[in-house]
Image (cartoon, rainbow, N blue to C red):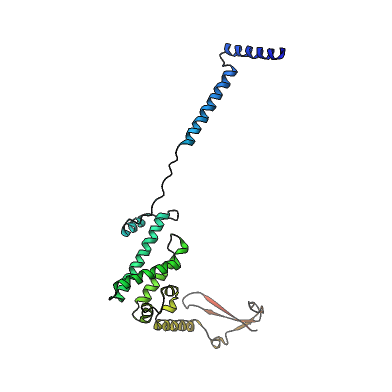
Length: 253
């Protein structure tokens, strides 16, 4: 008991000394700190209780005319982070090729405008389903290339066979968008391409008899197939006006 009384007397004496020198008693300072903590806790609770206004996501601007969208997209950069504008750009691109197909089929099927428009939209839908669905909101390059390929081959006056097969139902739309250029091109163009390839191959290919007397035996080169170094080589200039030398190496095994 005496120790407790002595401790209380010491605290009272310390408080009187602090008041004498102009200092706040310890108990008063602790009380102020507790009040500040309570006020801070109340402010934090009020902030947490505030309603957080979430910004609404932008709607896809499909309601704008396509011409307006094209002008806007030519003025600003549409990045991958802008999903709404990317979707709008994809829709504008699809609408462009859809109109191209509609105009083409209306010329070819002048007596059936409704069927021509329906066929054009079916072709574009199949084209987008085959090339565009895996890319989300972006129209891939393969979609545009295949659309131009279809336009060229269907408009070719000498490719009546392809149009007849498509209009009569012998060739499905899904099979059409999966065809290669060599398969959908007209036979005359395919034959002409083969002749071009043969002609160019003959121009760049040299006969071994033309190289006789100009081949030199050497062991400087190794054959990548058999590993032998028994080879013959010859030098030739690729272009008369250019300082380019071509070395021809032949394995003797």
